[in-house]
Image 1 (cartoon, helix red, strand yellow):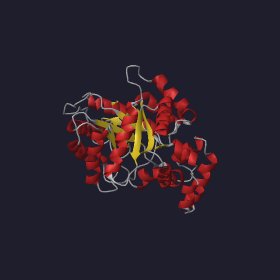
Image 2 (cartoon, rainbow, N blue to C red):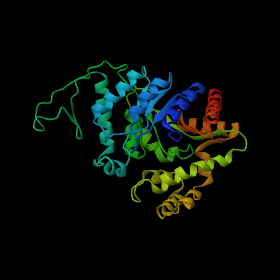
Image 3 (tube, one colour):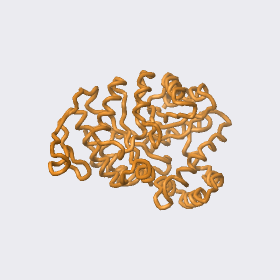
Image 4 (tube, rainbow, N blue to C red):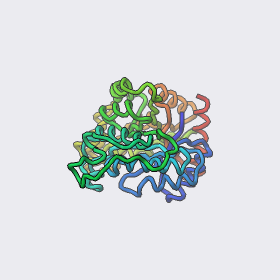
Length: 348
């Protein structure tokens, strides 16, 4: 199982990248670089490429609406070149509040658009002349649109790889099925081993049935916060604010993908309660309403034996790589947790 983590800017960007370099030495395999309505991910990814040697540098995630498919492909190829073949293109739809509110672009057809983008990116990386007549993207632009002067072009540079891994952050049945069919990796949210089959089993099976048999199996990233040792169970509470934000306040009441997943994971009543409290401004009460059972299942916090049990449960549910955060007040403490996790993973 590979170990991945999300780049944190809590202590400053350069400090965060310096910590990634130390985590890499401790066993980190993948770093996800976020992009919401913040600084762009590719700039940070290029900087990380210059400060690391082995770790895969993945966008986690770049929204599909804010760049053309060709630009997404060019960007990934550029980072792959800078990093000597260590890029992973992480894609996601984000949400209507960000896409329409910050980018001013209609939030339409996320699954169909992602499918077309994947096809176009792989065409660019193979250095084919890009010709795509899809419902959402027409490249070149048809003669009756624009100046009529567009012509098929291919990437000038020769990419390091013809196939750069594509990860997709998807939640709904249609998007998860598309991910299982086409992508190289999947980033679910609010994943617990016990509920995975009920929430996503049918969608994954549907997509895998259509998957190219020549493509490697889908890499599934999940895990949670890591704190390995005796008497650390109280650290599970650190996940409460973030969980309450996403379950209760991310998106509109009528369209909150994270709330839907939490509800389908066996916590329907709690999902409604958390959202009601959060939207009413009672954030602390929303945090307290998150079940202790969920916090335990969604973490790798506890003694070695507990963490090993969770690792085996994740693996048996289909998780092939870990996506985690490391508890610790200092970089040294977080690096030590990465080392402990690496040691446990190596014994599996």
